Amino acid sequence: MPDRYARMLDLAVEVMSAETPGLVWPLLTEELLLALDGELIVVKEVPWTRDHGSVVIRSPGRAPDGGAGDDSVEAHIRSGYPFIDRYGASSDWTPQSAARVVGMRTWKNSPTADALRQAFGTHHVFGLPLPEKGPHVSGFLVHRSGGDFTRHDERYAARVQPLLKAATAHRALLTALRASSGSDRRRQANHALAAPLTPRETNVLHLLATGLTAEGIGRRLGISPRTVHKHLNALYRKLGAPDRLGAVLRAQDAGLLPRPAEPPGADGRR
Image (cartoon, rainbow, N blue to C red; front, side):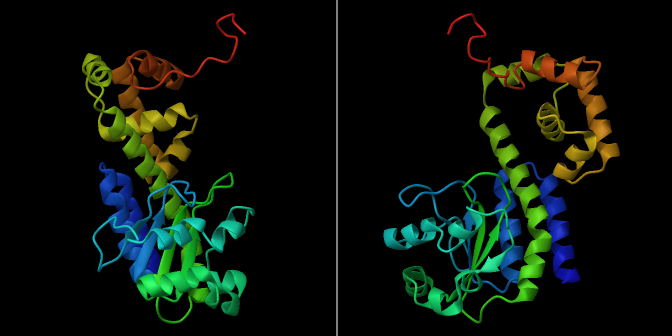
């Protein structure tokens, strides 16, 4: 357990230093497959419905981001049985196997288990959710063809949950930054500063705008509060701002951050 957790901790720190979102999932899913003795893993990053949402499967024997290859199998995966009923309607985010959630006999005789056996040759699925508010569930589904997942696996997964949650949030931030980085306004604004922001300074700026403290930003990015303060000082200098509020306002004026939406009626109209 300590060695496996230490490996995931090292990977999470590496992920927090990554500036490319495409590097995140290969690092994390490979380690999860190794630690949980899995054969393939389904990544559920965004809300699915039975008809919509990409099913992303990773495994040593499959092409990266390959789908299930069968509409009926993908529908079973998207349905989230039996995890959606457990995690979507509860505040208990304990990682567990499907057999543990509904019972071994019920799981083995379910249409979902049958479809997965035929498609992948696996017999057990382990749900590792990422805690969040709302009815939608995101996280990882690890598949295994041998015996069911153990309490030891559950304890390991529970320990790495916060690391995976932070890494996922960092990946989402990198993706959002990359999507906006091609805008002419952003490039012109960055050139107008005393010096362009580095990718890490941009990460800190976006988290600063959410109201997080230096300690909170450090936990999210996997760096010390002292390092956060160094980035903040650089931000203040480059933005010509005296404090965090001034930095956010200056960044909004420069197009580096979106402006908050005005409340209904703010313009005098109903």
